[in-house]
Length: 399
Ligand SMILES: Cc1cc2nc3c(=O)[nH]c(=O)nc-3n(C[C@H](O)[C@H](O)[C@H](O)COP(=O)(O)OP(=O)(O)OC[C@H]3O[C@@H](n4cnc5c(N)ncnc54)[C@H](O)[C@@H]3O)c2cc1C
Image (cartoon, rainbow, N blue to C red; front, side):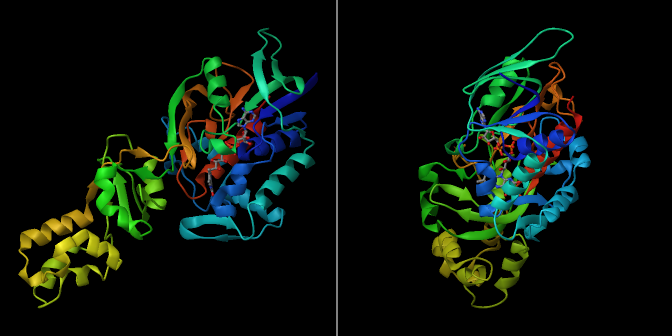
């Protein structure tokens, strides 16, 4: 039997961060993970270069049933704090699109950083190690968790659950954290795939199948009202539907049955352009749209109209066409699911947790951090920043 102050289940982004910080405080910490290989999700992240944070991180970059919950942890450990850590470890990095920060070389460097921080803080490892049961002793004076593992019994004073979300089950994602939360009576916000390609009914999509592989910039939105989210990003046509950063972003907000709307010419006033072009003589509609779109798209979109002279078309036709280009509304029939999702939306209801420490209010000593918690970031380094920040908040705050 092994006895520790803290056991962290899940040696991923949040778990390693938390273990290192708790170890630096002098806690005896053990990290348990069932995987053979350390931190596979970090390894494959950001196309192998790990988009480890974003220059600007605010609560509005996260989706949660309790949108203010993440603020305290995010303020306690900022993107600059992680950049400082990356710099201390001599990892070269660069900024890409919209404040996204990536390693110059490889995401393995971030795994090494976290592993070294844990080793330096005296953290012990049990990996691979499966946990089959978790019990909490019920004495009012002593708080203790007893874990049954395939390497024997582990006892700890504080238990941190950092087992991540359900995305990419082929890399060892499990519902361990969600199940455990339920066992301890905590509420769960229904989980579903997020940052995931959207699919369409086969019949509906058939006319667009030939566009597979084509990408263009669009504004993608869903829902209605003042706070309806909209993203200006690339959209990619696929054999089954739509993907690309713009679609991944909106997928996290999309509700089944709802349409999504795409502005396929976001930088232009299409209606004014078409009406003005009428005065321009012999220009064909296909040629005009070819100034904005790949030829394949304008031909497919316009069909027979592509060879029509704009001057010969009634204003109404041009207005309708412009409205369709600026607000193409389509109803996805689903997503490609957890196998292709980058993250899980939903998770442990944050109203059950203390925002400063991530401790379950009703279960002293039990903590949830990272993606298993109902805080889901946009694409762009936000999910790792949440993993680091929630891990640090817990590592600093746990007793
Ligand atoms: C393809 C892909 C690319 C991504 N790219 C980025 C990116 O560039 N930037 C970004 O911000 N986010 C990215 N993400 C999201 C990011 O990887 C996650 O949000 C982040 O890793 C969550 O951290 P976590 O510590 O909560 O969970 P994880 O990092 O997933 O760690 C969970 C750990 O728990 C272990 N575990 C699970 N179940 C059990 C169990 N039953 N017993 C023991 N151990 C268990 C797992 O083996 C794993 O090691 C990407 C995700 C994917 C899938």
